[in-house]
Length: 191
Image 1 (tube, one colour):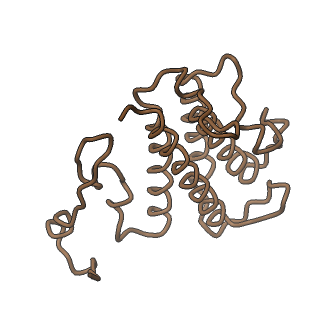
Image 2 (cartoon, one colour):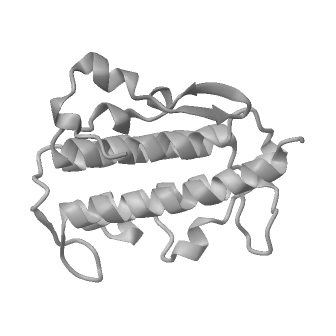
């Protein structure tokens, strides 16, 4: 069914919810994703809402798990739940602090390759990696606050690109790794 959302009242709009199950709890998808609150908003607001949804979603995959569980390798690669959060933290720092703000990876204290960014240090914990992720997200928000989507960021070593492209790349990466995190979490939960 195709719905023309433009003609709906707020009440009609809110009545079109989809029930979803998350870890056995039923709720409205609107409770989970702020992107459903911006269906008719401008492009930037929508992009930022989706990015925030996925930032929150990947952090949520660690909820209720132990330090051992989030470090457990469940696939042949070195991918772990905590490593995924560490990687998306690195990825956002590359795109927002290197590409947009112009800092070098060395100056920013970032490892050089994506593969290295998954590696956990002995002192990495759920709390420390979450804090680093939240700090990177706050820094990213500040870096782009006054930039239009068509602004050209020139700091990435592979060349210039628009802020719109950066948003889309970050969104793609976050969604991709949220899928991985969901599968890993499912393997860790009983039953």
